[in-house]
Image (tube, rainbow, N blue to C red; front, side, top):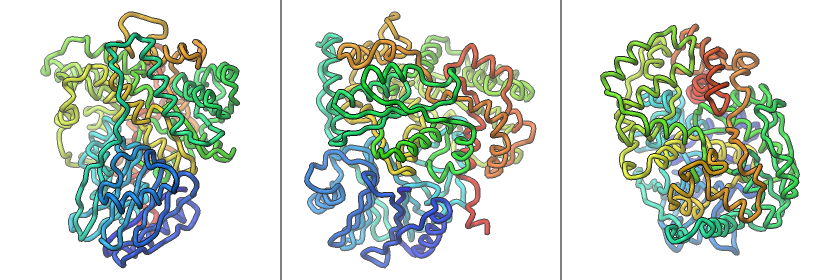
Length: 622
């Protein structure tokens, strides 16, 4: 397990004791504990080593890093290169550094601690900063930090309604008081009891071509060159690559790696049911000469993942099977000797994939706006308990659509996916709800502010990225298994290129071949450069979350989930809780005729992963 934690201030010894107990109990290994430089600073670190971790100590500079760094230059270790940059540039030592990383640097001479995550926030650190200013602590794992500092006993429920409705916490918030995520592109300095934020300058991306002057073939060629550079930079001099294979996006990554001469092994989830198993894995293997491995996924895999969820991952989600399964596959890849894995993460967001997002956006943007008074009247008329008990998530989907149609842009088109509804929350908790920081509609307006000038499609995909568990999936699977997970679609140059593309090159008007998958120019590139056959490129989208999870919740996992829900900070009425676990007839109808992913158990998934963070710590219970 790769995990780092440190603190400044008078709780130093208590943090060390709590952290050691947590590491021994949760990770099955003793951490190293290294006092450094000053009696006011202690760091504890439990590292698996290898390409994921950076550990440097020389001349009063102590540095710990997690992840991968690009733009440091060759000739020295990442830790040494970062330390040299710090000696030359001070607080600007991370300017222009790309990759996916988290860094903690302590300068004993200046008595200051510096913390940062990469500008794109593919990774993050969490910090604990109570208002008294006497203590400051940080960790790469949220739950570990909360246990170590005792923050797990003081929950922050002031945004709980927003979390249960939208599946994430905004504004770098966490479920704990005084515990926050470091903002993207931000260097935090802790010195003499004061926290100061400094901006990190992003690495300049390659200049995008003038797309208006290029034909589609020219754009595809420019994209091809950009993708090759990204894959080459990420893969370096490694000869073997493991690819977590889903559909077209990850198949293209595998094909690019193979074209660069890498020996490629692909991994896919296997449920033993053709409705859920990824097609065309054999087609890809024949085309690029790769080797494919199926990894069995069953209810026991999900059970173990739910029981240890906050040990591995850093945020609640309504898609836990997806992140747990990825961690399970990475465990197999690591056992086979792989230290570098590649995925198609980020592709759908920047190249406008996600057919469900596209269809929902077309529906919402093309529909009339209904008066707020009419929406409230309909919500009140249909807001009956019995309807939700028997219709489940389909009831909440209908209520969400009503609320959306009463909004104006950009709020209307930004966050369009919900788990619970305000009406549902009134039934979810037996006790009165905690005081909320702000009304949901006000928070939506604040989050959508500044997005009024982008296209409705761009706005919808931006909203999708806010709720996605991809970062938590990647970071948790990396740290748990000691592997590096990379995607060329998350490379700064590829993101910048895709962001400059006009919508017409991603979702052209009309109905060209494979238009349902989006990513038009990316597909054209794959065909033009003979990277993949058409049947792989234009295969119907099989959502990554597609699995028998609904059936497992209603059967094999029912007792496990019921027990885990006891960790919530509120009690769910028995009948309502039972309805959340059932595979309801209305939901089966929706999945058969209307849904893309065959999963509607979002509510119970979000609750059980939220409970993983709100349950009392074992140390605190004794």
